[in-house]
Length: 298
Length: 221
Image 1 (cartoon, rainbow over the protein chains, first blue to last red):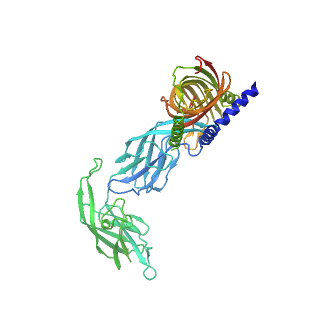
Image 2 (tube, rainbow over the protein chains, first blue to last red):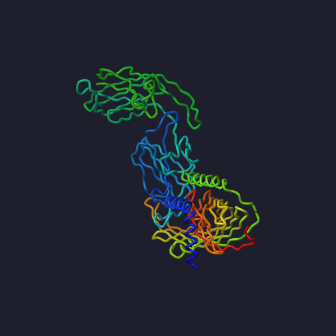
Image 3 (cartoon, rainbow over the protein chains, first blue to last red):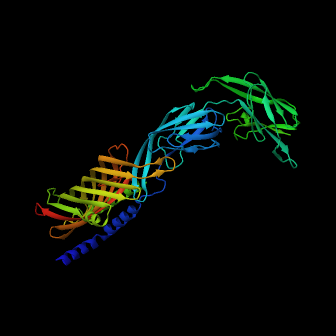
């Protein structure tokens, strides 16, 4: 009887095998796609970009970033040209980031979120799923939420902004080494001072010179190890406007910057636009972050 | 995208089969039920014996209305995974209701090749214990529990029912499960939903190999 039943079943299956095998193969193929994948299980980091209101990405230097809930220190001596990956605490619903900048400023950003654990498999164990990201508390001048769900692929979650302060003009000294090839000068300078209380910053052959908001010209004294002095005067046009951003004060912009006088034995001065390829017309203006406005050929 | 392709495949198959059937549909339509089938899933029973992570069973019943079958499934399953760093377990029950459309209407034995639709609901508990440490955040040990989680979903089904002997029928049902919705859980996202499968999948395939007993309630025309 059992044999007869099996024979009957076999004949029926043969009749409908076209359907049976087709569907069964599809089922097996698709089932294999449902195996758990242990790669990149957690979305436990947010991406924060740093920007200057009215300008482009910030280029300030971080001393470090400290994060509540851990003793780990992140991003020591890092220029924030690129966005930063910051960790989210799976044991908490919020985390505070403290940014210490090389210029002495300290900023705080508090991120709130939902963190839920989910088992994945006995091989992969568990993962944490972070959603509902917000950042209403911050000392930055503005914070914009771009994506409230941290993703596994690079995507900026928060864009933080500081008010623009375009009061610095950059110069770089260059020299001719062979023929007409220009290279960065190895000029050794002991000190550079402005004729007001602005602070000059040096980065190799580049000097970032603060411009005086109170006057139409600022003069800088360059002192050298042998005791000699050189001077450079920059003249410019000032325009003070009220910022459209409530958190920012009025902004003084400097344009039409030119070298009014100099004691350097220079053969030429050229405008440069090393920071913005589309900013030829703005290369005579102070930017934030500062750009090299002049290259001085010694 | 995978979910879209699966749906498209099933609908295309359904349309093609329906077209084939229209050409031969000559049987008198009688919507009075002729029998009730009661069955159980053999794969769940077999899997419970060889798969240490699974314990479950499922029973089914259907009744015919001409070429349409009203179907009810009820089942229970529990999963348990143990590793050095985590222990997970869940347990719950579920039911499905829906209808199948038979595309072998001229078969004298009422064998079936069918497509259908189901609505599923389940309730389950789950527990997770972990012993873990993170290089940034330190120890992440913890016990998490979801109680009385409710879930619902839909299924597109297809399969065969073949008469084996007198009142005994066998067959399989392939299921494309989708549109899972679970009640909110405070600290842990569901991992495995009884009757559905992995909760982090937008769509999921299921498969039953079933044996039925058919009790006739009306003499077949």
